[in-house]
Length: 200
Ligand SMILES: Cc1cc2nc3c(=O)[nH]c(=O)nc-3n(C[C@H](O)[C@H](O)[C@H](O)COP(=O)(O)O)c2cc1C
Image (cartoon, rainbow, N blue to C red):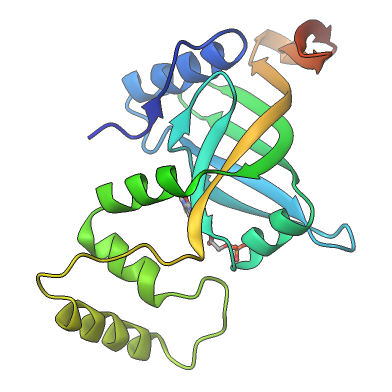
């Protein structure tokens, strides 16, 4: 199974994001599609965590989560976020800034139904970011849910779904000798990508 889907033909600079992830994958990097996501709360206080890229198109990058978890709430309140990829083996970094939008219910349902049953069960019983009385109670809840749903389709919980990050800037960073690293920044201006070089 592919780690993420590519939809449509990719144009620069998104095509380069895909190429660099593929390069890391070829270099046997574990989870090369893992990306750090930073969002802020209503007071501008930032939080970062890893998420997995699940679809890429020329429009943007899609990941899935719990809309009612901490990041989900933050993004729904303030949709501007930042993403970072870095791979030790290729020593390349990509930084993306952009605005999130919810993906369609059709895409959410389609992706949820393609997930392993264990992941569907976890998404159904886990209320992301909420405090738990005990971890064991959650495992028990998950087992009971599995028994109750034997031979039944598991319906996507409404709070679970995807966000598409629509990039406004994408920076490609390549490690070079003596820390004279190469930085190429693409900025979206009037629907066109403009490329500039930055000093390291
Ligand atoms: C490699 C890796 C990939 C992850 N992928 C996801 C993901 O795609 N979606 C998600 O909701 N959480 C993912 N997580 C868990 C998040 O990092 C985080 O713990 C969780 O989403 C709760 O974050 P929040 O409380 O800020 O919402 C991943 C964690 C790791 C280490």
